Length: 369
Image (cartoon, rainbow, N blue to C red; front, side, top):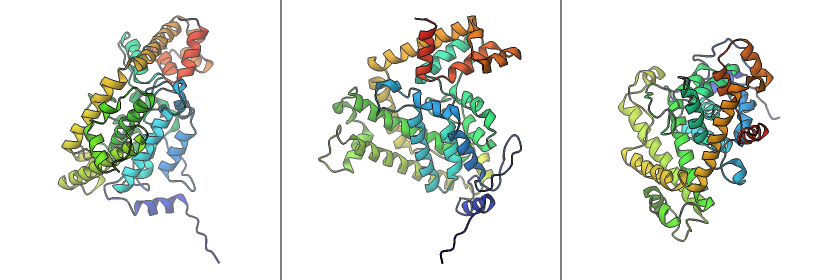
């Protein structure tokens, strides 16, 4: 007769911890939550966090927020939600290879863009300009922490959001002593957007085959693939191979750095003054080449900038409108006004949470053109 074993959350946590590296964040111990919370019967603490994110409204709204192209551009271009899911998949894979906490890496990845504005990074820059007029600032990673504040997530997740960093996210800050799970999400994000943006650029027809096929990473991928593949029609095979090359390099270099710095415990990770998850020097140059190529040939292409300029206009117009007409804010935000909170902060939170479609419709509703 088949024997069925049910594991409660405590048993599951211990079983998962048994296969983790000594320097990984553990399921069964750690910093826990800011506010005490009842343990779930069957889910570990980071699995509970993951589900709180997945069932939240800000997560659902990511499906109508721009990655590079506006969601209305086409069904197969990435939006902020599909980007997030791709980051999550890569982060889990990296965590598994490095024997780190997959669930923690997944939660950080799923929540890292919850504070992003509509209209992509262009929208973020527009809202930042609006806030700077009042001596304030906007950064979507900081906004992500505000968005999840009501979910009472584990402090290791909040720390991962605080120290999330890519060339586009908090690029001027210096975060060293983050958990390895947080560090791999940084690179999962970078690997995801470089490759899916390359795919979207090729799909759109903006990127020319004679140009992108000259990239060092594209050439390295081509050597490992059948010679009869077409860079356009078979581009996903090329891009998949590029991702594999980047991941293998990241894993190899990270293992080397962990060993070189004598990392044996989680405390060693926190004390280490070197980023332990990194590309090799050669890969950093190859990735930089790809990033510059995307900037020059894709992100600054007229068909992309036309969309972003319109999005920035919408955000700035809505910001000014709500400053003059705070009574037009939804009732949930009206309650915050009544508590004497700064109107600028309230308007920032409201606009940052909008989808592209919602912001555009409000812009039309108030005839702000």
